[in-house]
Image (cartoon, rainbow, N blue to C red; front, top):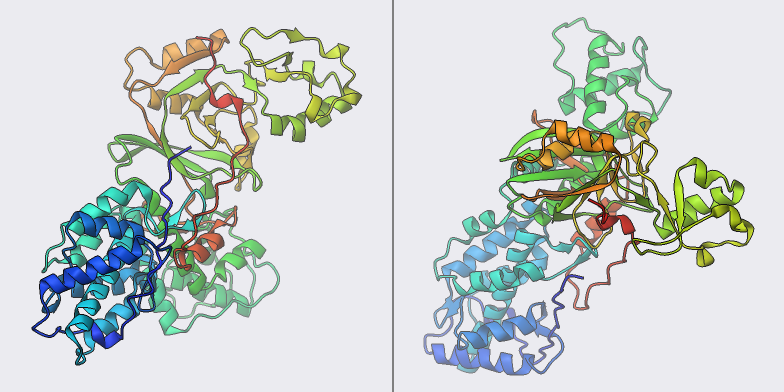
Length: 581
């Protein structure tokens, strides 16, 4: 299990001051030493407390800010005896821009900091002025570390879908960045560079701006419900579909001034097909219930979809790897890249709604040709055991072996000698293993990348499922349509392997493990929106109902309590390589 830094929130009740007390220039007589002493007072109280508040503002990074300021001798970053620096004002401007990334400026003390910076200083004692500057300093630093880490690594922990104030993997970096801030720092550019610079992220931001303009215009209207629309139909609803597709960019402007807008003509048919392809629907050119629902998706709902997918882009490593594979579960697609160029793509089958394919990145370490399939306990209980009880000959007919235990040399048992009517998942007599062959549930090749989720890529004998538009049928692993092509991509840096040798080993029929000498990074993702290769917006159905959960987490303030524990996935013995070979 990954080590996870759990923030210990800090309460500080002693530093309560008026908004005006920290805004604008402080009295000239306030010294830098007085501000440092006020910071020291904050540190002393915060280190003994459980939660921090500066005025009415919660300080999420309390314990870590205590350590940060002690390491720099209580010297401020953002303020001086003369008041807040230019960098402080740049920070507040950058916070205002967080909304363009789908982040809430209020998570970073925007309202409070804006008021502090624009109100003139009130007459106050020197002690109050120093305390006010120290409080402003703390809130500015807390805002900085939150915004920096959220842009660099995401606000929400993808393993728990829980808001986090700072990603553990970015903790060291973000405080190093804070320590390097200068009084006149251009933080707008700094934060822009922290966010992903990928085409996917930047084009999604452009789409978000387009949708915001649509929402502001307020002209969107729902297409009226009614019967399925087909080519040749005439209906006032056809004119509504035509207008919607023209607005979406799928229907070019009509050149014929005498066009009957209520006629479902060939031009509209092609536009419907383009729209269906962009939304992962069956491209039949018919406006049925699913296509109508996609056409009636409001700009506001589309914007929410774009913004949650911006967060998913922030979860990705900035360096995807020289050779990498991206699986988009929501689109049922796999693409392989070399040096940033797509060299292979294929349809895939992903987890069912109750065995969802997870989101993470990991290096591939090996592949197994002609693998055994060791039946996982959950699959055995849900799917296999009921079939054995109904027909004890099921095991022999489907090339299963019943073994006494999990050791390599485990004894093979005779299933005919077992009274299956008395067997249940708790007393199953050993384990099931399916022999290699065209019947094997893992197909001819499986691809291993060690992970905590017990998932991997593999071939499948159920080739007909790739003809479906929606392909969520697996127990969490990813079934690939072109296993040989994928294996050749993975092994392309190994001169010992080519298509001829791979096909020869496949034909031999025995299991063989092949180490991957130059690992390929596998990125399992879940994008319900992206911009396609031709610049077209692509939307997909939220098959796992993750968008709403992520949207709620993005709009929740990072909590003071530790994140919930991640639900452990079902163990799968096939994540280990086979000993043969």
